[in-house]
Length: 171
Image 1 (cartoon, helix red, strand yellow):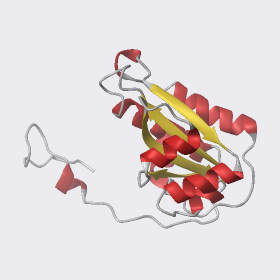
Image 2 (cartoon, one colour; image 1 turned 135 degrees about the vertical axis):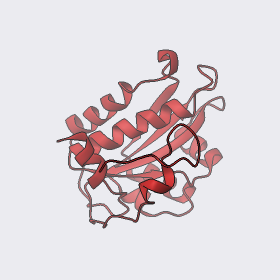
Image 3 (tube, one colour; image 1 turned 180 degrees about the vertical axis):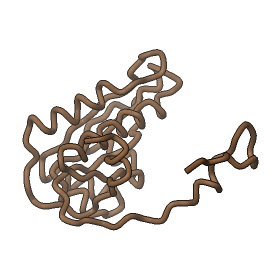
Image 4 (spheres, helix red, strand yellow; image 1 turned 60 degrees about the horizontal axis):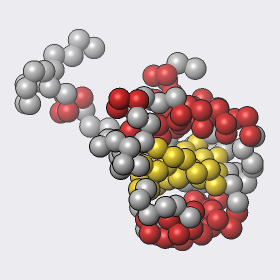
């Protein structure tokens, strides 16, 4: 599939079918994250793939009661290592983006979860104190097909050479 088509069609999924994700598909998504670029190739990340039902439900509680977290086929906790790079927050987001695009390519849906209690997530997943939980990704077969959400007009957000100088779009 064409990357731009994936970007334009992808939606955040908050309702999943109760269907396991095949291991080869999940591993391809994981590999997409591992191959993501990082500043100075430091790769300041770790990934915890959660498939266990009880652990996913515990994570749903730690995610302010967002029940769909527990209903996803898998949840991937993406961690950053502050000792590895000063970009330990930004680089894991790049990996999460690559994983999101590959998941869509594989026919799966993803939702980025930023609303969580980090201390509880660390306890549930036995994450060392010196690592940061950057984002949680729910992944699974979509149980919904949300419509596109409104986007700001490009003329309001893109500028040429300086802020406020409208970019001269040709199309």
